[in-house]
Structure formats: structure tokens, C-alpha cells
Length: 455
Figure 1 (cartoon, one colour):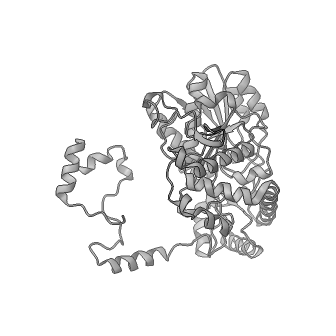
Figure 2 (cartoon, rainbow, N blue to C red):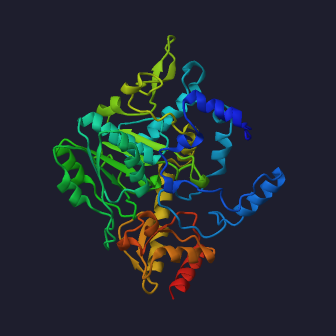
Figure 3 (spheres, helix red, strand yellow):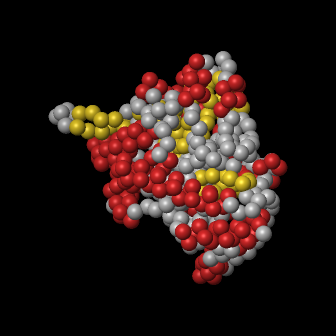
């Protein structure tokens, strides 16, 4: 239902039932600085429906969209081509309208799809078992930290400076209500290995460390060999958690499991799912079999029925819907099922060879653009070992440059000043992402626009 009219007596009655004095009390946890002091300027108030629709359409028309201009924005959400067959299949009624598969006798198709999805994710991440997806990559990372605490009975998490700051913000928000100690750092814009702090992470591991969290490729695009870090974690009894925000990279980069990870989480949006204005996306979560009973989320298993026929069921159901809340391994109540289905369909269509070809195309195109932009006077390529995303150091602050590029109809990347406000050492950094959707004409437009802005 798109329109829910409520009268003031309706609101008052609901407030009485929940014991809140007024509506403002419902927002007590939202910082005052983040609240609006007045209605949003420009929005029509108390206007006829058609007038509102026209006003909102005019506002939306001022946006630059990923499909209409050269687009080089990444930072955890990537513009890849999604075949039309994916949408065609996920819009079948039995997929589009199904909810959670709690009744296996009437949900065999959904359960089998999730079982196959788990198999694909486990193989992709190099792990032994995966769940049926989670809400998104950031919440999956937080759940991994909680899981590490349960496994190790320790509460100190070391988080690499190369982990996306939005993921870290989610972790910090949720650990406000737990006993976890989160130790984080800001990245340095060092040439060659920006955001790589593996040596300092190894030095910081002690007997209280439950886990070390790293991202690969990291937020600045750098790819690292995680084996030495994994060895150091295991020697100290800690777990290594690896975050992957660009899952297409696994078609070219060694999987986290191969490098010794104990828990791997990630964002699966790149395969099968469009940008969708920021969501819904899907969280990937996989681990080693010996830790499976501490893994959050849903897990689909294969079994046989009373007649010996193959069937699928939810297994090891340690979510809050199934057991007492304080015993649950997860209190996240969605597994992004339709997004997971889109991921599975697209990955099936690609196959292993197709994924590898797609990954190599992404890398090759990114190298081409990095070399071109690096030749512009004053621009320095600081990420020398990357997949399809790299960081540039500009001669001036990046945020105004990106706005000027947008005025020239080029969405040129993400400024580090936006991701790390107030960190002066990062203000000139700009992250650029290149996928198979970027054309030579897009490259020309970006190079010309950036050269013009910096001239």
C-alpha cells in the first residue's frame, strides 16, 4: 500500500500503546545534528497529487545517472552489465512473490536455489560452507566480528585501515551495544600500497585479539597477499576475516580461503544486481566447516524424505525466530533472497570461464585508464597493484574536482575527503572504478574533462 493516511488521534493511540510521550521520543538515538529542523526546501506542501508528481519528477531530472554519462564511481557498489535474462527469470511469480522458506514442503524450489547459491559462494570465496546470504556486506562484516568473539571467547577486533569506512561505521554502531573492542585506523595515501597496514596489524595481534579484519582489494584498490597475516592470526589463536566488496575480482585474484581466511564476507551486488540507487544488495558470508555452528543467518541443507527422495530444508537454524534471542547467532532478519537468486542466475550464466574473462576485462580496462590519467600533469597514480579500482593523488582537493567533472557530464569517482572528512592528508585522493561497461569514448571524455579541470 503506497498511501497510509493517519489522523492525529490514530498517532496518539499508537504512542499510548508503546509508552512514548510524543513522536520525537522515537528518534532519541538519532543525533540532533542529523535531524532536519524544517521540511526539505523545494518539496511541495499540501498540493494536488499530479502537481507533486511533476515537482518530484523535475527534481529527479536534475540527477546524473549511471546509464546516461561516463561513469567511474565504485567504492563498494559497481556498475556491471546484467543480462536481461536475469530479470526475466527472477520476475517469475514463484520467485518474486515467495518469502522465507520456513515450510519446506511447499518451498522446495526456493530452498534448492539457495542451496545452489551457497555452493557457488563457497567455491567463489574459497571456503567450505556458506550461508543463504545476509542483508548486505557491511552488516555481514559486523556479524563476522560477533562470530569471531563467540569462537575465540575474546573481544578485541583489529580492523585494517583499508576496510571501507562505511563498513567500519556500521561495525562501530552495532558494537556500541556489545563488549567488543574495535581498534581501527585511517589509511595513508602512500604510493604503491595505499591503505596497506598488514605489518602493523601483525604487530598489534595479542592474546586478547579475537580477529583481524581486512579488505581485499582494499578501499583504495590495493591488492595484498594475506598469507603472512593469516599465519600470524592463527599463531595467536585469532581469526582472519576478509571482506570483499567487488566480488568480480575473485575471477582474477586468489580467493580469501586460499590465503588462509577463517571467515569471508562480502557484497554480492556486482553480480546479477544493478546499482538500484544503493540497494537492496546482498551480503555474502562463508567460513570453515569447523565454525559452522557459530555462523549467522540461514543455512540450507540437502536431505532425503521418508520415501528416499532428495529434498532441501533449513538446517542449524540458530536465528532468533527459531530459538531464544539470547542464544541466537544472528538477529538479522533477512537474507536478501531475490538478490541472491539474481546473483546465482548471473553467475550460472557466466560460468567459471565467463567470470574469469569478465574479471580480466575489468582489470585490463582499469589499467588502460589508469595509465592515461596518470599522464595528466599533476596527477599521480598511487595504487600500482589493483583489480578494477585505483586511487589517484590530484594536485588539488578532489571534492571540487569531482563536482566540476559532474558539471561536464562525467561522474569521475569518489573523493577520499568525502569518505574521510577532516583528514587533510587524504583530501587530494580520488578513487576511480572501471568496469566492462566503460567505453573508449567514456575514457576520452574523462581524460579530457579532468585535464581541463586541472589546467
